[in-house]
Picture 1 (cartoon, rainbow, N blue to C red):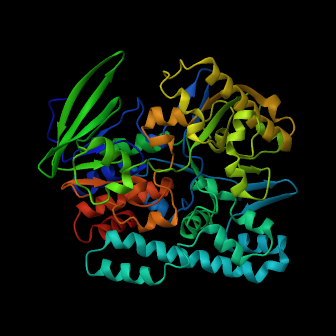
Picture 2 (cartoon, rainbow, N blue to C red):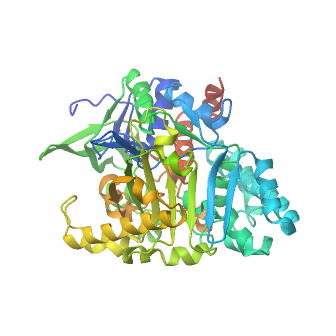
Picture 3 (cartoon, rainbow, N blue to C red):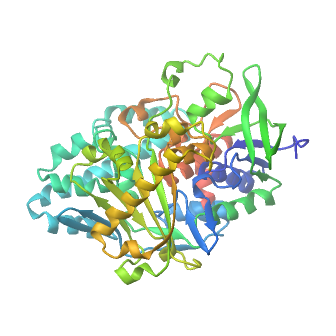
Length: 523
């Protein structure tokens, strides 16, 4: 492939944003897009992996909202995959929040959710009603935020002007908003329980980021049958049908420039223990490697970007450990039905986040539990996943040690964390430990090794209030013919990455490209 330079665009990375962009351009403009991935699997955080014994797990996709028939999220996914992915509906009570003396099950439907909260906290009914109105108000602000980059001037200027005047609510810190709205600290904790879906505790996140996730699941949750790898498989077929290609084990090390114009990429090709260099050229280069990696690692350091001072250090986002468990028996024996379980040791999310590194000492403050096998009709054996936050720097001493051959101390730390995560689940669901037959722990070092994400962050630039003021984030870059896609072109999460792909494609499709994409998806 190294002698082919007839692609219409090159995409760095193969995550959700990359796949969405490449598929949209293949379908609407017949573009031949080359997708280059450093990992040995295509898909980024949407890929799956297996282990002997028939176990299979997702790495990053655990559930998705807005996937019902006719919903816009579903239409976009169907468009980029040519309806090649079947979506399974999760239980109506898709999220279970577990606190020391309180459990709350999130029901499907905004009205049902609002009523369930009002019944659990009757003295706060009026505040709860206003909270839901504020969520929808913040989402209107976010829609205009997206349209700023999707619409041609002067329409984009109007959107920007309106948002400047109405930014007080959406750009308030989530904790600040919740303390102002609710008197009961337990209620504040319950409505903020999904904060790990966007990677910031309430004191750090913008209320609009909280609103994006909270409203995303109003109509329930879904999971791709066969696992998240089906998305990359189906989108890849669309891309190849138009003459494009997806190449794993191709790590882009440099974006090639002629003057201030991107003309291609230099690649490290991995083949077993051997490697080689290759160049691919194209009139358009799109990066799904994250804004920080793109500007600091893939472009010359001499480029005089006006926002260089904001690139001095990598984005400090959400870093986690993820425990993959193979089960010897059906977890439905213990009452699990495929819903997610958010297990907390306290009602103070910020305190738990501040104490996240106690996991290294064998104490888990918080854990997210899900069961891929109960959501996937094709699962051969039962599996579970447990996720918890952990600061990358707590393991940084082991960074230079080779993957799968790190020191005894590192393996001992992983063993302690594994037991702590199983312990917190066992505490609330006795008998869970007896289900576990196999375990494997991924750390922030694992995520950094496979994805190249700085500090192993899984959401790139996090959804703080300041993130929405960083006007250099988005689709356009100061380099001609170089564009960003994925979460840094829109917002965190799989839908944010998908919309990043939509926005990048929209820019290259012309002034009204966004409407062209939406019209095609609606059909």
